[in-house]
Image (cartoon, rainbow, N blue to C red):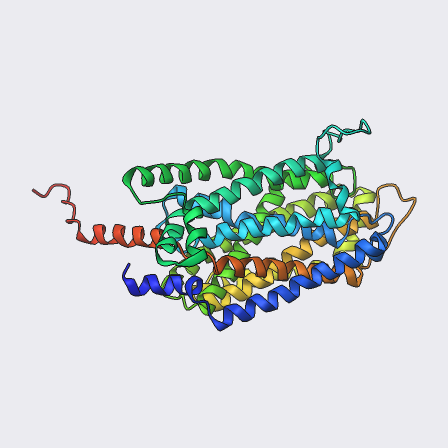
Length: 444
């Protein structure tokens, strides 16, 4: 990597740009909507939300499942690509790993928002208390706390370890208080062979460890539903169904964010069309996997013809939730199948548009899993109608703003594309090009 490339990758950190500053301000204002709406809800209690009986979970839990699913962009994609040695991964890994941490941070807020009294969240933790109360260890909700906490700590470490060499490079170029901060974060990195050996081993170990944690997290989230007897929730397929959906939505947000970085920061030389072409093929594969699971889930319900489940089935397919259901099918399956099989469709522009559509479709999928089942309970003593309130929509909008705000802050602190990985890729490519052609069998 030549000095010009290094300056280009470090420019957003060292100098910033007008676009980055405007994005930071706009996303901070959007995140402020979340704070304002949440503060209003705390002041006036949970009744300002549209939650009612029997629809006791609404948009808040929809957002929780959605953001936890998006967090799989970094671990499952970045870790698998690292372990398989895919060279085209190098511009992708840091972007994906950052998405994981920030999506978990945003998603983790929604159980607190849904509590209504967030200052009592510690009641969920297995801590001794004066009331002699202990959490129910058989509850999947407690499993969520443990799994997501572990996942967040592991993902943060998985993001930090590969960033150490770049933090050291910024330390050597910075002055004043920024130099002191980067010195502390670089942990004494000098780039010795021993340090490189330890770092590469640490990254490899974390990549192996984070994969089962990532799979278990969204499996446990699915058990929040599958462990109950609600119609169309009590299903053994929910574990792999949720994991497949998480990977699908994770690839979608990764494609969308990388297209924004490519255009906004001028990184087309590094985040090339080859990267989008390879991600597009993964995207297409996951679209087929998602369609298979969705079809299997609805086919078994339709064939079983159990009255309580059929009530939910027809509400989705042809009832009040039908517009959302068919929009989901179009965005998550029809559009990707019409665009992504073609090389032109896997270019940054078309692929990012498909990705935005899939994100909307996956949010609708989470909504359709939760709301129709609760609105048509197994015991038909009460049937409710749920309409999200303005407070819920404001918090939902603010959550996206908070995610963008955190990502903008990250771009002002760490290069969006890993410098040392790009150097390693360039060195490997140079070694390959200089290597002699292997002798053909039978030729002496």
